Image 1: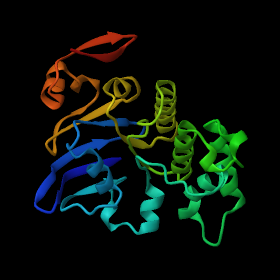
Image 2: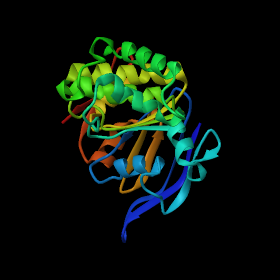
Image 3: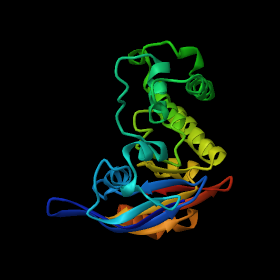
Length: 249
């Protein structure tokens, strides 16, 4: 579904991405992992045309993202940044903005139905008329996620979506992301710093180190050697209920 080939990007003369290549298929939830400065957030913004790569290509369903119009890319790729950008509006109207790529003159009854269904799905139906500035951090993140899902994208990009959430909300949100990815057969790329959260909730993993792909694949690429090489830490991997977990130290 998504093919990233030899993607490169530099800030001035400082290269950040150096020929990054990997792929993801329908239903995959891919954790983008690595230390600060490895190029994770830069990679995400190069995939959705916020930044223009210096080289390489990104294809979604066989189509080159660079050749898509703004409206086409908005219907194909949804992006949730690190910080909430909800403005001063109600919960419902904030989610309705996700339907904008499909609107001509204004919202249709179908747009309203899609938004209401998504709000109910993420548990925000009773809060739909509440101002977004009165929400908790977890509720605001759910609004951002709901807005992204009503875009009905083929690719969802999440940049540290759980950084301001408590552990319960972290697992709830990532569980919802994984379920929606499988149900809607979309690919999700998510930048995470919590390795165990990634191991618990993601199906595939991409390790970035110094702007390069160190390893990419399913959970088999998460090894103790990989953690030493990428994070420069000593960690042991244990298995519990069929899932890997990292124990640091």
